[in-house]
Image (cartoon, rainbow, N blue to C red):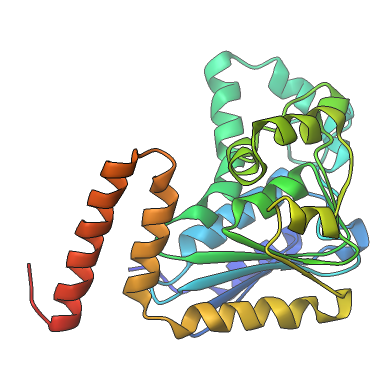
Length: 268
């Protein structure tokens, strides 16, 4: 059972730029450093990972949103400077570390981006303004994306001599296909709201003033369906890409058998 979040934890997360609000079956996670365009740091990543670990089992939908004009302008560029960020290793220092240590560090960063795909929660990103690099990848971590008409997605890692390493390459490729994903990543160009919807990167686009309302309406619609059915359906769809047709049909039959027995009150 997950322990309740303490006031001290909440304060620490907010200092890192993350706020968690719980309302029954809905968790709202807000990036709350608008004055910095929600630039991301290792402290923010640790906070996001901790939020994922702390969610009560009663939560069914997690809504990710951001304060200010930008969802997230990406990585805090101070990480690339010799001075870095107080209390954090710079990327220059990370680059000089042993292979295992470097791999572990990146894996730790990725945890902030991966829990959004867990099977028991449906996640929604409400994205406005700039969603660049790490910001783009954070939005990609969610199951669904509702975007404002001013959104600008961009994967800028390659222009810095890096690769997208925060768990964004697989969902991007699944959403838009290999060729388009390569073009978006390798050129670093911007993808606006209309194109994002057209290529499957976003579910819907709305005027910026309506973004929060549209995302919350989607959350309410998801919460209206029985939890077990949503969880089973999410698992079927997540696994479909790795199964052939007959294996997927078998998975559907097994899932439906579980649903029928639960609805009938028949234990296995």
